[in-house]
Image (tube, rainbow, N blue to C red; front, side, top):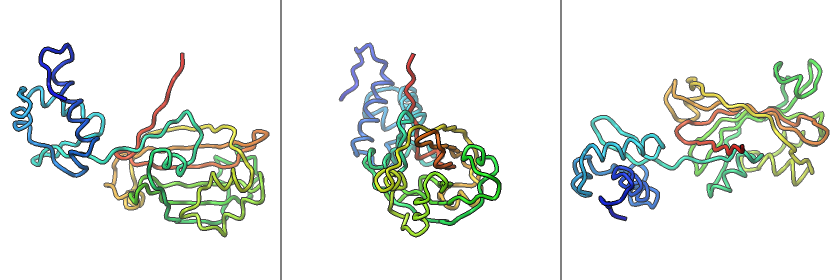
Length: 245
């Protein structure tokens, strides 16, 4: 692909597409610096302003990052999740061509979180399973997940306490072993900042933006099987939503 100065497509957009294709194609690998603005202007016979416009668009999409005094660096691709489908972390990872694994931080019985008790339809003092995991894609930390699982829906979920959940898929266990099929989920997303503890797990800076995700998942007869709280790295994850008129 070359810059066509006679094309109705703006030159900066052509350069953006060209550089994006090279990054996606591996000609500029994650962690590798692109040529300087002056060099890019010389290579493609365009102005520095055109180069800056193209790079700004790449920065907006999280494809590159400008580092002061060092240049423009190619970033690893973000994992993209389609929010129109009800799937778990492992299912999404496989669909995106990634390998997923987890570090189990907690797997125990605990009290029902007060704000979730009504949704789970459990009385005061009831216990649920807390499965807290650090979720990794290709061995890179992407999210921290707190899954509160409701034994009142099916007591067989208590087997999770004895399972190795570092590689097992929770949704596969629900679906394939227990025959529990998720019907729908209510979910909210908001942006917050990483605490020191969470930043250490996610290998990011304290105060960096993360996406807080809360999900209540329902099975047959509108029974709430789980409440899941997740924190996703903002620099590694992107959520897609398709809206219909």
